[in-house]
Length: 442
Image (cartoon, rainbow, N blue to C red):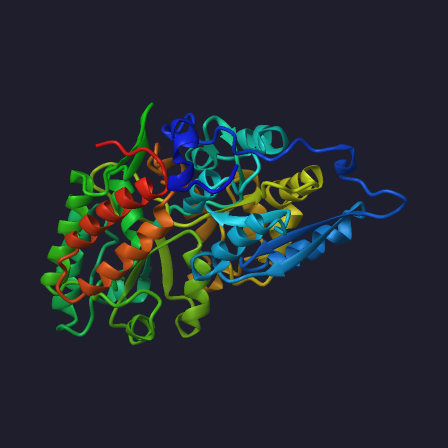
């Protein structure tokens, strides 16, 4: 199916009005006998794979060494919103796309509604139902069809300095009310030198996870149209909570991933971070001088042990791949085989949490827990997967909406007036949906 534009909306809007009909006519062609997944005349089937994800080149090499009938050529591309998604999109439209790509979950509906992915229900659907948690299955299943295979899952968690929590007499907070009390105590006990958290209030992904935890559902689809609800009461509760903490000077609020944010943690002026399961590897790499002083805990909640999810990625077959069976064999290995996980995480810098629970032991074996004083961070994060809030749906336009919200959040970092960024996101998402030729619920 061609990309959905206003000029094509007459013929496809009805088919894409609801989630159930979102993907009508957007699949790849049936594979032929040449796509048996085995080579001919002693030659392997050759497929191509594009990714920016760490460790995927090593993983590909391991696959090729153990699968003589299929040869995968790996190419590194920029990270998704830094140009990778645009590169994939243009390649599919030009007819020279790779067979396999990695996508973050929030990008899957965008690629599906543009007709860029193959309906892989036949090749991957049953496997995904067997190994992926329900909260993750829903992120790759649209219109009752499977469009990608989940690799990892990113429940939000709290990371904190055990030594400084002890020094300031802080108990690990379990609720957001306790978190605010702890923030007040850190500021007082440190005589204003430290804060409990560097919030990174410009990061839309963090906001989405916190809103999901609070009960928000930013996007949904009815039988007739897409609905945008970024400015719902649950999101407002979250925005007001963090506004109060910023305006009361109880948390730092640097730009995410910035040198200033790194320095605040390095200098012990921020003693905790909100992250996700994959953050353990990042913290370990960024703050090597603080080895043995960090721990992970469940994210504080609003009264019930629910968490949001941030990040996570999947493998997808592009629309026109003529080698879908071989591509699916590679994807199935990458998402369900322990050797694939070990190869991908062998460098020891990543703490990606496999969606398949029985692969987490393999992932754990690659990660030196000395930085976390021997704590089993995989067990902590894995225990949060069942607590991820259900029924979260990404919209086909969330990537573009993110860019709008990120810019507006940046303007609010000093003032804490975050709500206008959500209002801007609401307006941007509604416009983008209609611009895409999809029907919008009023």
